[in-house]
Image (tube, rainbow, N blue to C red; front, side):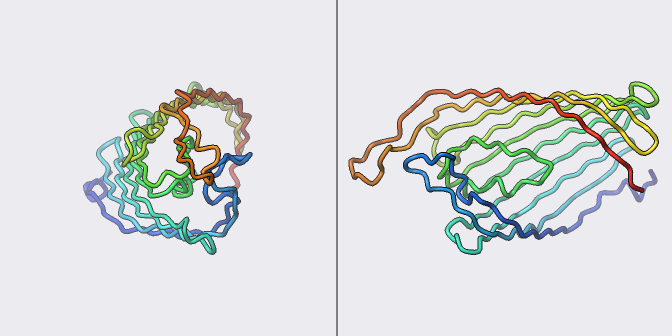
Length: 242
């Protein structure tokens, strides 16, 4: 890379999207007392931001800030905004392998913050419905290794934390996971298999008041720590169209 390419560059970016969700409030199914029932609505996402990028030999750095506003067509009380800060480090030290490290901080004002993540990011989904403000921290790593001329190893891992900003006693979610796969490359195609696993721990988990309309002032019921392990096997085919 020449010196000009190595100089940091600051760019303004913006994205817009229109979509539909059948669950505006991220309500559980079947319904839970004290939590709004599932409702659908169209929404628009507006995401202006700034990106600072630079290269240094075999390393590329990218720092981005994004402000996202979600506007619902009829459920205006579900309108929300978020602030997101992302950092990525891409390393290409050898023709045989590449490394990617990333970290992000997301602050959102409502539980609909899951809409505000990019399509390539898996948002932690175990926050209690009704959360009014939360922060999500995430770190991830990915490795691509050329085992032989036509064989490629794919590996990745991540860790995430989601917690309420205003309530120290609110449920807190910890999540970690990884993936490991292999690909066979052909002229215009690649086929492969991959195994994935995700472990989630929710501390201080609660159930809402069974009948919030009875006026007895019942408090949420503490149910202790909740754990979940999800495993998956994936078969993949990729084709280069041009």
